[in-house]
Amino acid sequence: MPEGDRAELGCPYPDVFVVIVLYGVSAGESVAYETFNSALAKCPAREHNFPVLLCDNTPGASNSGPHPKGVRYVAFGSNLGVAAAYNRALGIAQEQGCSWLLLLDQDTVLPDDFLASLLEELREHETNSDVVAVVPIVRSGGVVVSPKRVGFLGLKAFAETPGGIQDSEIASINSGTAIRCDFVWSIGGFSRVYWLDYLDHWLFRQIYAAGKKVAVSDCILEHNLSVQDYRRNIDLTRYGSILAGESAFMTTHKSKIQIPFYLLRLIARSLRFAIWRQPDLALLTLAMIARIARYPTRSLEQDQE
Image 1 (tube, rainbow, N blue to C red):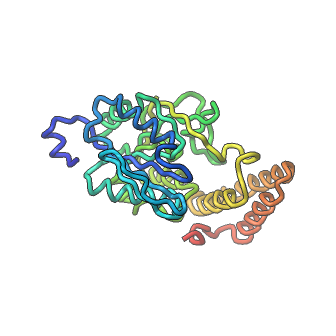
Image 2: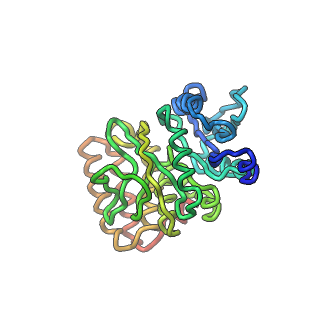
Image 3: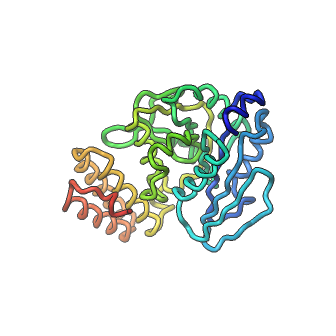
């Protein structure tokens, strides 16, 4: 809803366009969609505020409608990743005049008060153009996995639960993040280089590089972070995608002095894979180590384009 129309209707909240990315499940099987609808039913300011795009990356998927009013469904027919889904949603959000985009994965669990709390956060920061993202606390398996502080040697947990506008660089997972649409347009949309993995690292790096801020809410989400346990939840194809995104990000958006430390981390990881009797993952990691070590000043991002 355009700002003028919203003001005329006396609506104090910004409109938020919601994108839920699906893969291998229907909308009805998505816990994110289920809990979103539950939170929406309990949100006093729900009218006009939350149009939804269900973006299905399942190979061979077709329209699973009908869907409720305000909900669109698009099937890509193949797995184009999260970047394609987010960019499709960004374009529709612009058409509808929504100022914020809420990113959700299919397996994120939203508490009933999430949307009401989010609207209050967005209203608080709406006039502060420096704040371009609002993120929740995210837990996986009882462990806080997001947000994290960005340090020289990688991501670090906060000593205490963060809250409010963060002055230092932080990173958060995509799911649960509300991002200003105009900021994403200003950086050229969501990068297709990071089509599936490390898009969240890239996005929050762009925020910090632009001198913008992230606000952390006190809302807690539960999310199934499948890559949290490499030993049990990763196969060769999936790990190859993660490693490609990670190496492209590290060799492009981090200082060259950090490359030796990154290589040491990869060496340690390959040793763990060997100990865990996952030789294919160990060899793939060693191949990436050799590739980076041979040309340590080369950006691998261009290889993903």
